[in-house]
Length: 514
Ligand code: ARG
Image (cartoon, rainbow, N blue to C red):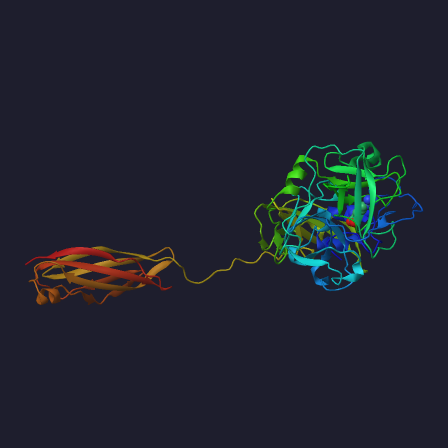
């Protein structure tokens, strides 16, 4: 079954659709089994089903395909007859289909295909139906669920339908169609909970005053929704599950401008609850429906994940993972629940709407998941992370004795603390070490720096010579030179401590007199 449409099964009620729309991510679908609906999502008790005869409901089989009607199927079902059309749509032009956002909330373009020129689903492609894959999905960025309005999506086809360059018209913005006759069509259920037809059904209904959708209370938004059915309670003709995304077109017999997109209803053909359609005369929806190059909605590549250690006291992060076409920003949401021994989830709690979740003792034993939503010009798309189970914090370890590590990491300092030259012999004292301890070794050299002749000999004359140092303990060392040629000499020392740290080179210059 395709993304989120209630369709052939007939078992999924409109109510579960609305509820599931709150958390559409795949990981949350598993939670739905545990959610109990005491009353309908509309707040009213669920009414007993009216005995309704009917088609689209109470439409009639069309004599052939309608030129603007398409069916949406899962890409994996291409080539499987009968076509499992899970939603309808309208071919706007050879490469674009207008449908409902709630038909494709969690779909990737590659999951979908579109069938045009289809009459009997069982015919497959044998009677001239053309199938195209989808290259991009665009949905209204503000769409969250049908009752929030803006239930509009555009599918861009991978290649053109064989219809030439023609386009199917869309209503102008700000036109009031109330009272006008309009055609509904689709392969949706023949009545609420009933079977779906093999043959495309259609019927003529009327655009109704908003007041006739008053029973929907806050779930009906007159600016983005259109109420349509038969007037004066004679509401025995309606669209039904599986017709979603399909067309509501003005019928004057010659042109058929698209006024609405099948969105939702309570039950089907319930006189108190007419069908609700996306209002394409709304200027924003109108512009989006006509967008010649609809921007592609972002698609998750590998899916969101929960990062971090799931134990009390830790902070978890929702990693959105990799996405294609992500041009907007991410929003995040968390959910937690108790998973029973039977695998069912209870005590479902949502929040916070933040990328991180600080785990407390109250989370211990619960499962936690997050969802990342990419919101951009091409629409909003959610990716749910696999759930993690929260464990208690590990017992606090007894205060460990401070660990001492032998040796240090600090280089010692070294300096010449005494020096004197007598009878052309020099004696020098070196003190080296640091707070980590005295130096244990010193390397001392001396080199003549004046009075050498130029050239090779001079170089030899200047060559540094090493001096053997005597340790006097506690980092004190002494060196004595042999008798030296009167000149100026530079002495250097590098000290090393017990941990092998070496000091910087220290030097001193001494003059040996005649
Ligand atoms: N939401 C339905 C679908 O997904 C369309 C329902 C229309 N219902 C109605 N009573 N007009 O196919």
